[in-house]
Length: 230
Image (tube, rainbow, N blue to C red; front, top):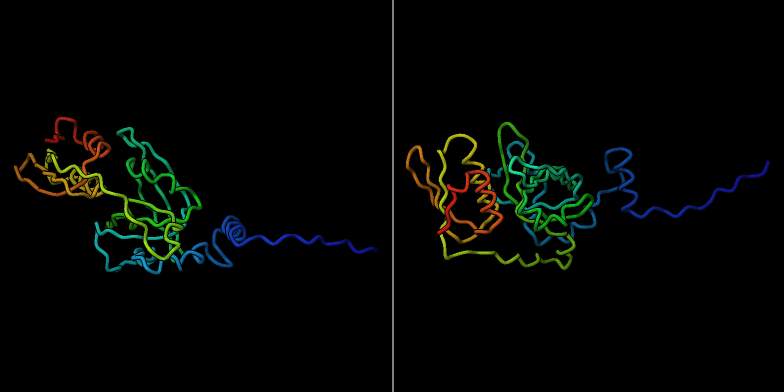
């Protein structure tokens, strides 16, 4: 019997091979997509996701951290305030982590937060006893922006120094105050903000970057009458 010729097939490139491995087995076998990007990150303060997931990791709740990885999944959700947010799962060569992106971040950086994109993410670390560690995203950049070995310049802050933001809350207990603090932390800047707690009469001062998108989020949560800029 004659031999059946075996056609010579073109070898898959590394990216295609890794993608196929992940799709069929759920893990990478011959390498990791981050292998090619690690040299770009030598002069950055990026930390491994695996170190953030450890129980005694040495990090603090609300600490600002930067990680680099591959976007695995993006799940969009409409909040009760009819704004968009996303649950973004990012994986490096040590672990994966769920991250939260709210509407203002999606407006500015959503184009980078797509499946299979290689990104550097900076955000606020959330460490809670009842949940896995998460990052609330402040900004995202393609890893390719770091190819020359230096970090790209930051976006200029949109600062409003002419006014002070006054927020009235029922009190410091419950979930409302942490939610407002989370929103303010997503807009770092130099403008003054004063939080007034109706139950005790106490005031707390902080700083933020006053943007229209932030004011909209605050009004959705607190009510328009409880958010005053003057």
